[in-house]
Image 1 (cartoon, rainbow, N blue to C red):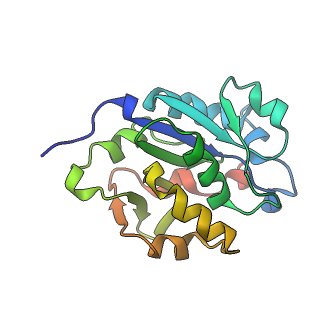
Image 2 (image 1 turned 120 degrees about the vertical axis):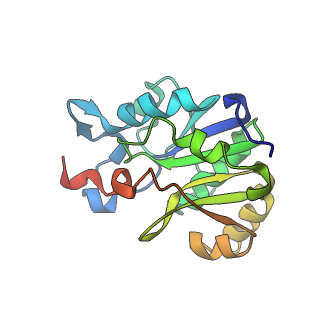
Length: 191
């Protein structure tokens, strides 16, 4: 079986573009965790796993640019949710694959992207979604930029629900038993 093994086939996208309603409006990626912005923990773990890292942000752009990564913003205004951030990442990506993770996942496993990329190619269609025992981790996916046109059409039609967009495509649930969903639990309770 052929497997993806080289890090130069994937772009990493960190979603930090939301309104942070559950964080009283404070930008999650910039919230301090252990005297460092949460995004710095994510980048420390995620950047070595991919060829390039993009940060999807719609506020505090100068602060996010200080992390030394390309910052992409939603093409459509109005904080349209994670799919708008994914669209911005797919439009900017120069690689055949993109792995998306949320900015509030400071405990992301050091081999997270590799876990996706080591899947046999026949398991990967155009889209894979990390699954846990409790369901989809909707913000941790592997996908191809070939989905951008359909995603743009979906957003332009006023649609926002990520799970409904999943259903438009043949996607594969992926369960990594060694990676529990603990690092995706909302970290705002720990801060």
